[in-house]
Amino acid sequence: MSAWIASKGQPLHGRLAIPGDKSVSHRAIMLAALAEGRSHIHGFLEGGDTRATAAIFQQLGVRIEAPEPSLRIVDGVGLHGLKASASDLDCGNAGTAMRLLSGLFAAQAFASTLVGDESLTKRPMRRVIEPLRMMGAQIEAAEGDVPPLRVSPASTLRGIDYALPVASAQVKSALLLAGLYADGTTRITEPHPTRDYSERMLQAFGWPIRFGEGWAEVEGGHRLIATDIHVPADFSSAAFALVAACVIPGSDLVLQQVGMNPRRTGLLRVLAMMGADIRADDAKGNDGEPVADLYVRATTLRGIDVPVDCVPDMIDEFPVLFIAAALADGITRVRGAAELRVKESDRIAAMANGLRALGIRVDETPDGADIHGGSLHGGVIESHGDHRIAMAFAVAAQRASADVEIRDTANVATSYPGFAASTRSIGFDLRGD
Ligand SMILES: O=C(O)C1=C[C@@H](OP(=O)(O)O)[C@@H](O)[C@H](O)C1
Ligand SMILES: C=C(OP(=O)(O)O)C(=O)O
Image 1 (cartoon, rainbow, N blue to C red):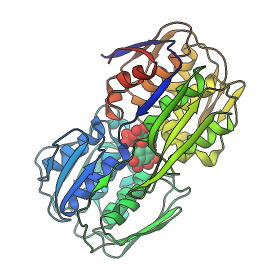
Image 2 (cartoon, rainbow, N blue to C red; image 1 turned 135 degrees about the vertical axis):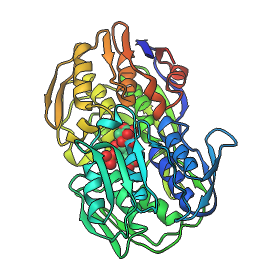
Image 3 (cartoon, rainbow, N blue to C red; image 1 turned 90 degrees about the vertical axis):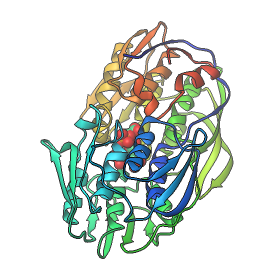
Image 4 (cartoon, rainbow, N blue to C red; image 1 turned 120 degrees about the vertical axis):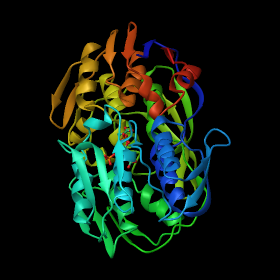
């Protein structure tokens, strides 16, 4: 089992380029595969999750070439051009792949079985199954509403008007993809707006979608037309070096051209409240997605009550926010974040246990935690195969008084291939791949 040993590194300096956005890369493959014509995807994330999505479409007869790293050329087969596969479709570790594809495959004329790894096989799928069944989909999950998902052809799908019970871009996107094939209108409203990449990308591929803050609406019966996509750098991946540069004294770091979609950058608002020194510059619109260079300098952070309405905008950044909180003065309180318990691991428990192992007091609640700022000693961390837990503790180790062993790190490559080497290049002490 792969592991890292990490400890106090250097102040961070330099300019860091971050790999492509995972959410955008998944969606780019899906829509390019269903479009008519040839699409180029530039800046594609070479991660395990997004490669799993690409491999599934290849298995269903879509030609996808990778002439160079981070480029995919996709020959779309049109909305009705996918071909059945007798083998299972393996989503690996990717909740995004499994949930979005459940919506898409519910609308196909062939049956499919979606499987995942040990972590994905524990994740809740009722949230997509229930509304998709309301649309007429035929989906069966294993006991407990977990994968594998067996999706059978439905005679017809019909549009529904659905209010999401939890803020989830994955559920919204699954329903929109099913809605492309449904009779009538599929309308989704959200309790809090979530990332709108599916909506923006459907528009880029020519689908007449209507959407705004917290709602989206599609009708079936149109076509997707091939286009070229430029994937921005993943804010969630940038978050690790961002927090590291905030908390390692003497750091002065630039993160280059990071995706700045406001539905992703809640961490910037929260770090600003904690006293961080982060400046965005050279902002551009990159094919409709805002990007900017982030200039970060170390400061002393103070504990805050994280506003509950920031939670969906930073849902994947909580592991590293817990590290910022552990190194801040005072107590940081997180609430309204129960979703963290059903990610690749129970991220509240994994972070609380890991921080305790390094000497920090954490009081867990069902939907969050109180993190008491302090100082970190060495110890052993179980990442539970969760990429974001492993990377968060690599950041923590840079402020620990002795070695931190971080176990089970292989899944870091699902979202951030090359994390160890690229963070070493800016000053991390991190031994292992
Ligand atoms: O739609 C997406 O690409 C994602 C949505 C979020 O999940 P939820 O929809 O479960 O909140 C996020 O945690 C995940 O990493 C990616
Ligand atoms: C939750 C995540 O991804 P997914 O749901 O796609 O597994 C994540 O990347 O933090």
